[in-house]
Image 1 (spheres, helix red, strand yellow):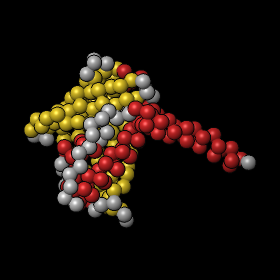
Image 2: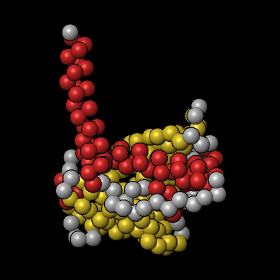
Image 3: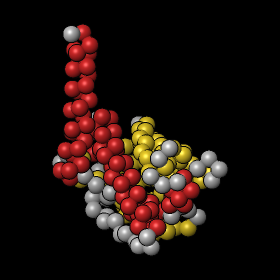
Image 4: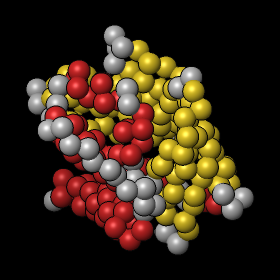
Length: 191
């Protein structure tokens, strides 16, 4: 399943690219993610915990930087993991590309996600909505981390599971807005 999101950060491309070079800081910005060890050669061990509806999934696995293009400001990471209670597997390649905008930096993120087991039972819409919410949280956390770094502060992000009621409600609201737009926009155009 291919999922694309983008967001803007009110910082110059050089600062955002420098931030993406510090993988532990990047991981700390993603809700539910936690690096557990550096395996060397741009490989890391870690965990990701996500709650989707009544199901809480916790994956343990590895992530490896497969591409880092300084000129194009593009980084790609391939991650694989197994659900810790044996309820499925996940594999994902995430590619982030940075470009300059009038207000700072646009970060375009593409995720090629493969799920098996309990997580695969959710539809593409729900997974896309949860991913969009997580990307918004990631971008806010990243902006805070960069700003704190400029002030000489360090910010420790919590490794709490991503999901729960707040993310579920935000994803459900996104789905409802999509449904209402499909229903009301054609209706208003014919009135």
